Image 1 (cartoon, rainbow, N blue to C red):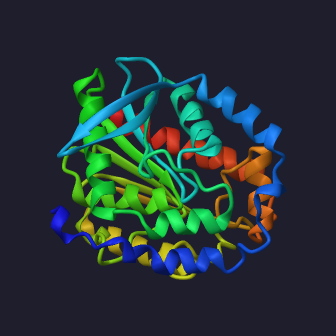
Image 2: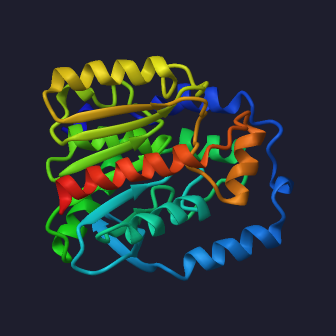
Amino acid sequence: MLGALVSSSSSTFLSSSLGQSSSSLSRSSVPAFSRLSVRSMADSAFKKIQIQRDDTTFDAYVVGKDDAPGIVVIQEWWGVEVEIKNHAIKISQLDPGFKTLIPDLYRGKVGLDAAEAKHLMDGLDWPGAVKDISASVNWLKANGSKKVGVTGMCMGGALAIASSVLIQEVDAAVGFYGTPSSELADPAHAKAPIQAHFGELDHIVGFSDVTAARNLEEKLKASGVAHEVHIYSGNGHAFLNRSPEGVRRRKSLGDSDDDEAAVELAWSRFNSWMKHYLV
């Protein structure tokens, strides 16, 4: 199955679309003290582990009860930074409690501005990323989680949906504002239930705009798996990102919506989906 994946060139369209408005986003847009203090608080919640797969080892970050249902949380194009850690902590605290694991797909690198994030995603080994996710699912199942789901945002959302197609051990998937290319994985061949979330005003054409969401929905109908596709009126890309740093980055990239009700609704739907299939 992994042989059906494409090389890192599969990220070119997404990174060029996101990069169109990246020139105004720089390291100076977020004070260094603020970034470091918030990151420190998020880091303290996690246990850092190493996972072996094939001939490589990668770091991962785990939080939650040992015997809880597991959820692999896949990073955005920024890397394993404060926003994705915030999401993983939140998921671990949802009723009835989940054990979340973030695999470090970039091997310790983090994009501090959009240009760096684009460079990192352009260089991502996509077949290797899916292998990392598969190894993460298996680690959770070998360490107390009877069932394991996969979720992710943006780049991670596309990989979460791809995981439902390519990784047999995945029990459920939820993708936020991202769809895999047809070369990476065809959702018409999904094997695990998929829920997906998109913003109505998302401007990344062919990846997470409304047309991409509707195309995904048609593919999922063909797959025969249980599925839901939700579109949030008045919201743009990455609308879950509510940290001060995340809000500033979104505004710099052209997304100024501020809709806490949509965020809470999305998390409620996520929780219901994962509870239904993992608990």
